[in-house]
Image (tube, rainbow, N blue to C red; front, top):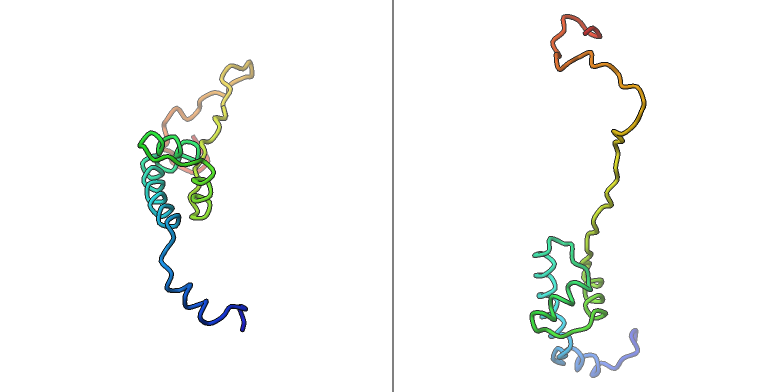
Length: 110
């Protein structure tokens, strides 16, 4: 007895029909995946909950968060804007020697 369960109990568990909650979770997961793909992967559990409630499917955010976590559905977050160029400076600007003329007769000479 590896699992410490009787043989009859194990086979009774195998033949038992799927629970109502498991069936509902499977249907809910289909709806979650649909909303997630429509949002191009940007919606997390709070926004998916709002979208489902708007459709008429009432469910809690924690349940949706759990289903998303168990199935590896993760929202992609937007990157923060980072300014890389500061044009308003008083530093000297190098002279434009090339002037978009890239034809040269030998290397390292413009």
